[in-house]
Image (spheres, rainbow, N blue to C red):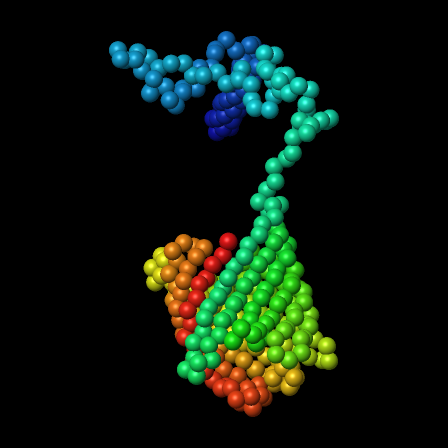
Length: 326
């Protein structure tokens, strides 16, 4: 009896403590919930201060006054909105002309023509020279080129030949249509006519002409004639500027033929080749006299034809002439 009483008293005490703690926790939760409801229901009476202008510190008066208030961007109208009521009418001074509908240009006034729409003309004399040899077989040679047209399409005339003792020894004349296929290259298509000693020959011509990398001027043309005749001519040159006016120009030319043509003294394969140096002085870009030296030769059956007529297959020529264009 005496032992049961303390045990029962201890249990009663523990139960009382647990009950008190539970009631206290419930009251705290209820109070917190009520405070949150009150804050939600009641309107806020505090005003949030505007964010400080990051540039406010730079706008101070000489006496150290406070920074200017931050700019309110809320009333600013962003780009792309409607025009203000006092904006100028875009069509108010156009005399009825509009860009989107109706007439938009003054009648009777021609439009501007761009550079690639104009037609131009050019005549260039690559060589117009007198050639001197040891045996006295002096001659006059010309290499001319003219064109007329636009930047992309033009008519081209090429003429090259030799005149000796007042007689035309040989000449090559081409009439071509040139078309630009790249910034520095033109394709050319047309006809070629050979005159001089022997019967004349007619050819269809197709080639390319332009400026290669490193400023090499190149020209390559293939030809097809009657009777199965074919030919190829390749020419190249380069300009070495010793000064702004004194220019040294190496030049080389090769001619190939697909079959023998005894009537004109031409053999199959590499028929003729020439390489030379010309030093010119440009009094202007359009006029330049020059002097130079050139080595020319015939090869294969062509050399045999030249020797049979008493000529020399290989010879060195001194030249003096003028180069021009306009």
